[in-house]
Image 1 (cartoon, one colour):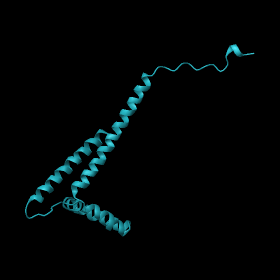
Image 2 (tube, rainbow, N blue to C red; image 1 turned 135 degrees about the vertical axis):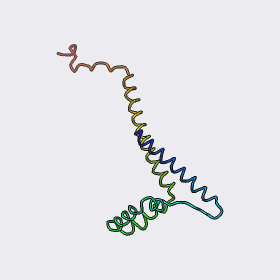
Image 3 (cartoon, rainbow, N blue to C red; image 1 turned 45 degrees about the horizontal axis):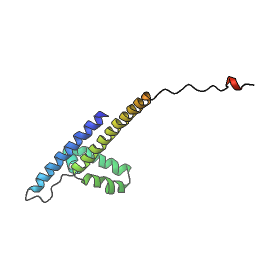
Image 4 (tube, rainbow, N blue to C red; image 1 turned 180 degrees about the vertical axis):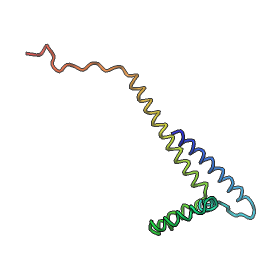
Length: 129
């Protein structure tokens, strides 16, 4: 789970860096709001894979899924998408760590308890008749 926390934290740091880059481009007087969308970044990094995902989605999914769902996600600023993905990974990793810590504390608490007395016999010799 430490890998998920580290990966999540790295993605959160990358999202903050992308937000800072977008903010510095916004400060320039000729750019009103310059934010790179997820689709723009994906197209600049690997346009062929974006086209193949679009083709596969259009062939295998209803058209509303691509138009209303996937395109909206691709229009998100890249820092929001990367930040949310990193946050999810970080929280999953932290939840695993928390559950392991709880299991260890439960085991320790059970080990610290006094031992149970031996069970009572089913038949007491005094009352046999």
